[in-house]
Amino acid sequence: MSSKSEPSFRQSVDLMFNRAVRLMDLSPGLEEKIRVCNATYTVRFGVRLRGDIKTFTGYRSVHSEHMEPVKGGIRFADTVNQDEVEALASLMTYKCALVEAPFGGSKGGLCLNPRDYDEHELELITRRFAYELIKRDLINPSQNVPAPDMGTGEREMAWIADQYARMNTTDINARACVTGKPLNAGGIAGRVEATGRGVQYALREFFREPADVAKAGLSGKLDGKRVIVQGLGNVGYHAVKFLSEEDGSIITGIIERDGALVSETGLDVEAVRQWIAQHGGVAGFPGAEYVADGAKVLENACDILIPAALEGVIHKENAANIQAPLIIEAANGPITFGADEILREKGTVIIPDLYANAGGVTVSYFEWVKNLSHIRFGRMQRRQEEARNEMLVQELENLSAAMGNQWTLTPSFKQQFLRGAGELELVRSGLDDTMRTAFQSMRDIWHNRSDVPDLRTAGYLVSIGKVASSYKAKGL
Image (cartoon, rainbow, N blue to C red; front, top):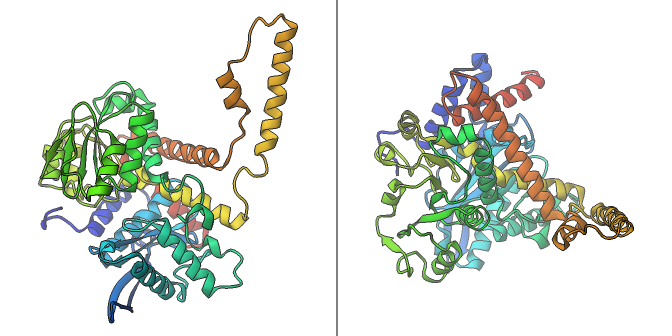
């Protein structure tokens, strides 16, 4: 964790904001309006558990209402505090603006360790927390739409959606009150892996431009690149699974709570995931070196480092020892402000959190739109697409036959071409387009402005500019 001499997470975000704003021409009043957190609601509620009443503390913070609804996850962790929730809410504002999701930024948290409670107890706690937020319109399809975060997932979102529907029986758009739901409860295909998939698409976009790759002192494509991931939760797991299976990257290190696994020949991500599920940690995993002090593995030599768990894991104390030339922030705020400056001096390229992990909110946006339109993507056009493609293939085959069968279409081409796009394909297409467009908007500034030293500053410039435009349009 970051040392006491460093700014807090929220101060770190503010400092990064200030660094970007200095390069912009905003009035001091507008600058302050964008920076400050609009409101934070603290709720303390009791739940009867195991024969006694236990009191829990939860938060919902709204950073910016330049667009509504506001959007942001709810995390369950015993480290949750107001400072962290406000920092995450502000990051959500900049993230949504950067990827052009029409939301303001919000975040929620409940201070508890989900491992301390069984499923029934967690449901009671979640529903009561949701009740406290819903009755104050802090969960509402048109005002505030949560999503999963650390310690929460589809199950918790389904409970929250059901709680909202029970309290708002005539709201036809009740399902849109929260995203990240299971498919059978109004969710969308591809949401679970969306953040990890977004990390993969972000890296693909980075490696598409040789000039960017050269800035990181690397060459070639993702194939064969050595990757170390910190945190094999939902985001880290999907990111390295896709990179290893689809892009040929080699996962040389996996850092978890109880230590790390290292293997220069590459780790089997799926096998490690299964081992953690059965044994509660990575210790004892066969065929790899186990390192008890997992944090030290962040300093191992590799091509790409993916911190995908907690904030502040790369700080002033260890930043100078980080060997990775390219870091992609799959977690929120894994690099402190102090570490960011040390790494920048070293020439390390950082793909920042406000862009790198925006896949989750992007697909959440698609889910929200699906819930409001009450129809799954692809339902109207998929078969019509297939019919048109079938006509084209038939015509080509007739033409070939008329020419004495001089050529034929390969079966794999026919199979892929004839298949119309379903919801999953459309979600992936939309996510890929979003990640590419957002990266290009940062890249333009990074390459063309000499006073912008890194992608993080470029990302903040793009997003703050969009938020400022929204406020000006409102007459502020």
